Image (cartoon, rainbow, N blue to C red):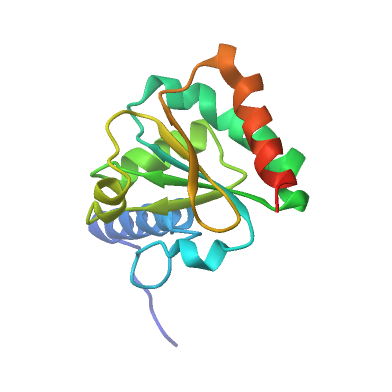
Length: 162
């Protein structure tokens, strides 16, 4: 007969920490990134891409996420891909944000700030509309709710052009 001891407090704490870590990973694992953690936009040739840079502390990002969800839902079948690149230093900050403002589009990370340098990101959020050939055709600094019809019109135009 095997006798088991009741779990010690330290065991319970360790288990809780491990569970929390894995829960955060489920939220924070890059959907659009490859195993090396870098985003390869060449994989999206032939698609229209909205590349959005965001951080958990960004107030306008709280308004842009629901709109981007709507755009992905509305135009995803037409070839729109939205990729939001998080720039937080702590993955847990991004995880908390995403629990409050869930993303129905791809989330990626830029830990080495390669994309930040490549796109000269200077504000949060910064969004880039990329055509099917991989060229940036629009750039938006910040997110203005009053301009969403303009943003959407640019997406529609990009989806219609060949």
